[in-house]
Image 1 (cartoon, rainbow, N blue to C red):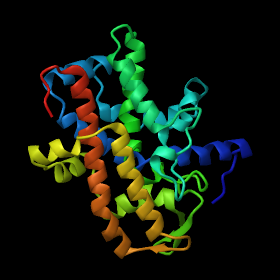
Image 2: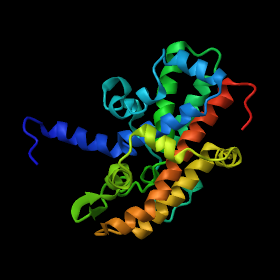
Image 3: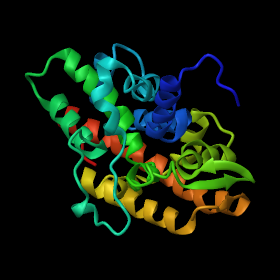
Image 4: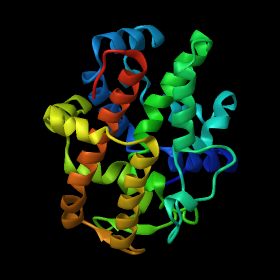
Length: 264
């Protein structure tokens, strides 16, 4: 493929942008749409106010582009948290620029601060909607040494690919040719008891769960693997579960913030 008219700097920026994206656009939309279905009326009213009538789905992918603008460049590292091979989650080196876990925690602090401005809370919510989705894409808890799987060269149905990109888009799109609303309708069918079990724990607990999945992905997908029908079938239930987890947990965080009557 020829990128006519693009400078080398533009190509580098474009490649870097792909590193930060998670689930592809549809995956983020699914996570946000699931969350919207589980907001209490009080929470929904607050979210609608902060987003000035636009939905969380509308903003679900905004940060992937915004992080590569000068105004929001400080968020570039907030899409992931690297856990290298053989490294325990608790021992992972902290990124001085922040990561997905610290971004979620700090946005929750802003959203719960009665002295924070409307604009600051609005921005915090837009970021939270995206980064909670990022936290549930296994390659966003991948190795720093291979850029979360971007440098792991594999094939997808015989075509050149990398491990990160396959998890962003290829496997989800091969699994289901659904719209984001159809994804929600089909996978968001849990019992109240099961939904309550999904939202238990802390942001760090959720990140550890994703890191464990990432370790399994690396183990089962070494360099040169050709991902085909068997692998799509193997990982589709995991992707469905992670999208559901992300949506329910995003709703849980917001309900906890904005509805005193909320009980998980």
